[in-house]
Every structure is written in C-alpha cells, then in structure tokens.
Amino acid sequence: MYNTMHYFSDLDTIVDDVYDLFACWQQQHTEQEPFSLDTLLTAQMAVHEWVANLKRHARFAVAQPRVGVCVSPSNNGLACVVEDNSVGFDLAAYLADNPELTDIMPERGMGLHWINACANDLRYQQAPEGGQQLAFFVGAIQDPCLDIQFS
Amino acid sequence: MSFKIEPHDQETAVVTVGKTLDFRNAEAFKTACQEHVDAGKHNFILDFTDTGILDSTGLGSIFSLYRKVSPLNGQVVFASISRPVQVVVQLTRTYKVFRQFPTVEDALEALQQGIPSHR
Figure (tube, rainbow over the protein chains, first blue to last red):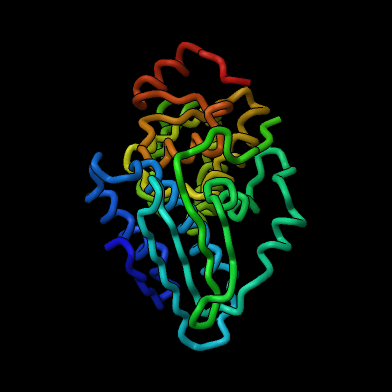
C-alpha cells in the first residue's frame, strides 16, 4: 500500500522484506499509474541501497532496530522516505568529500553515489519522531545518471 | 547464493545470475568466477532472466570479473536482461562495456563468431 509507512525490525530479513514490498507494487502497477514502472524500479534500487547500507554499517543505540519505508505517488514520480532509529552519520559531509566516483570501474563505494544519482531533492535529517530520515523524489530516469569511469 | 555457473565449452561459461546479485552474495560470486577463470574460462555470459536485484556491490563484482578476463582477451556479456537490471544498465551506462544480447543462445553465437567487445 502506497502512502503508508511499512516497518521492519529484523535486519537479517529486511532486504528480502523490502524486495517483497516492491515486488507487490510492481505486480499491481498499470499503465494508468501516474509514474512508470521504471520509476518504481529506480525507487526500489535507491531504497535497496540505503537499506543495505543500514544493514551493513548502521549503529543502533537501542536493542531493537526499526526501519520504516514509505513510498508515495507524487508529481509523476515517487516520493520515498526511509526512517530508522540508528545513530545516523553525516551523509552531506560524505558526499561533499567524495563528490564523484574517481576509481575506474569501482568494486565498492558506489552505493551512496547510486542513490544520489537516481534521487532528486535528497534530504537526510532527523525524523519527526526521533531517529533518522532519508527522503527523496524519483522522477523519470535521466541519462546519463551515474558517472562511472570505464577507462 | 542464487547464481549458478556452468561451463559451455573450453573458453566460455554461462552464469545464471538468479534472483539476486547484491552485497550478500557478491563475494561468493567473485570467488566462484575466479575458480572458472583459473580453470581456463575467459568468456562469461551473464543470464539475467530472473534477476530482480542487481545492486552496486553486485555490479562491482561484475567489474571485478571484467578486470580478470580483459587481460586474457576475454569478454563479459549480458543476456536476457530483466527490466530491473535494464534500469541499472541505463543508470550506470554499463552498456558501454558489456555487450547485451536478447538470449543466452544469441550471446553464445556471437562469442563463437568472435565478435569483439566494445573496447
């Protein structure tokens, strides 16, 4: 269901749980939706990267992690919000210190750039009820998006 | 681990990527591909028919494979690309380095005819 925050607390299964959520939306998608299937897949990709980042790197000060995912149709695209109760990190500083991918065909370190490339109006801030909130908008795919060096 | 690697001939292996190639199985993918490179394979056809997730770490493991086979005049090509993977290919512009084919059979035919890579 769109416009609803879906909560997950098991980091061992969260990647598959989020995948299943998006798979359900994909199956329900029709040409009458105000956003394309590719837009939905791009949003899924960005959310997956963020959730994977939480699973691998986030520190949770409380015993029970809690991650919420909400996707809302808006202006021919999708507004996405991922909330969590981790201690967070300085995303703006990371992107400022690493403005582009400099390695040729990098094997790691692409995830945050990947999100930044497919998302518009990316904001990482305190969630209204505490914890962290990543919010972004995915519209039509722009080409080129992610500037990977191939040689 | 959702992928499966099957030798096709002395030089070529077909990788059925399966549902996912992401941070959870990327290292296993790299290790398994290395074993086939060590066994003499230098052409790899990646079959993305059923792939729902190809994330940045998964793509990084494909870059790793490309780096291993390129000095051997080998190729990594994509076949039967699912729509989620097509979105990744567009976002990352990897169509510049990985030739794409509608089916595994088309890819095998092209490799047997010695069609060169993009680079």
